[in-house]
Length: 433
Image 1 (cartoon, rainbow, N blue to C red):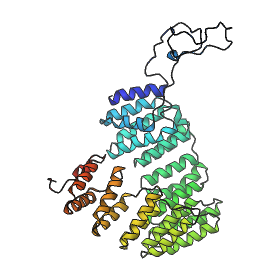
Image 2 (cartoon, helix red, strand yellow; image 1 turned 90 degrees about the vertical axis):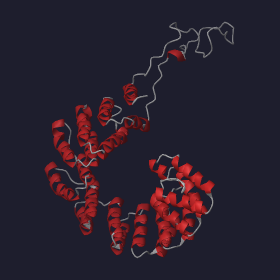
Image 3 (tube, rainbow, N blue to C red; image 1 turned 120 degrees about the vertical axis):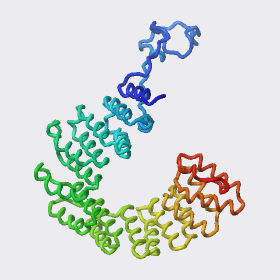
Image 4 (cartoon, rainbow, N blue to C red; image 1 turned 60 degrees about the vertical axis):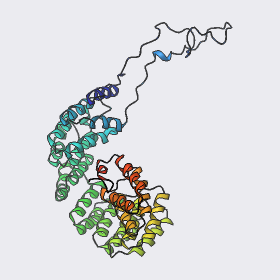
């Protein structure tokens, strides 16, 4: 089915119109309850009985089935199948005519469309798509306007986001903290970090609104992105003076900034302040602290103790915790511990990330355990976990050198059968590369 036909079909589904009109087998009303058998088949009970007071069931052949709405994946795929970006935008605008397509549940499809156009640097088409949304009554809803502002931000088009925010009163849409916070997020997404504090100081007074914890969290995030860690911490005092209680996100953002930038003791001070405020750390807090320990002179023993502490607490380690530890063990040359932690990661239902695999597999190859390296490659490639071409080729070459050609060919075949186009570059050493 072509992309345009698919779009028309989706349009009918969103409109509530059936994609095809069912043809009734008979226009005569049934005098007996519905049966899936032919009308020539005699009823099981041939005794005469009084007519039932209940209404006869409607034959299935003349019921109008309610079409199932397509999933986000199907809709997104039908749009992405269109290679011509101008037609892609036209299809998107056509689908936008249906109210359900514009609902909040379809936000991810809007994001996919905008990010695709942004990656192609077709900013005029992004403007065409989002400008088109203003013609609908939804634009009077601040939550809908907020989504458009955030989409401009994801595309790096902050000027357009600000223009829309400025136009909201003319579009009969109120401006509250909801849209203002969206504007700040668009500013962060556009990497205009220094602009965030400027807006934060000016706009609330103009709009007669009071910043909430979400507002402060965005400003703190921007300050940390700029490297202004002390200014970010000073926002805690400002929040307290304005009667705004910091959240776990507030503390995590500041702690991570300190931990990741060689200021471990400052991170610990914020941790103590957080606990004093009655806020318990979560796995994000612990992962930040763990990475801080590993970055601060490679304190692996302390990171391991923290990992053990997690196992005995209500907060359990996640895949990020395991990945940090695996890479730390590899850097320390403790391959046995790295493999043991990797196996625990799998046992707990997690998957390794690419950075971990790129560290673990070469380390195993260096130790000469090519069989273990092959096994890890096969496990991860088979479930579409990406491993770089260079790492895969190293394992293939190692298998061939060990005279295990059949296993090398099997790994090449597995890689080239997967979704990543780059895997076509993985070849047997005897082949031309």
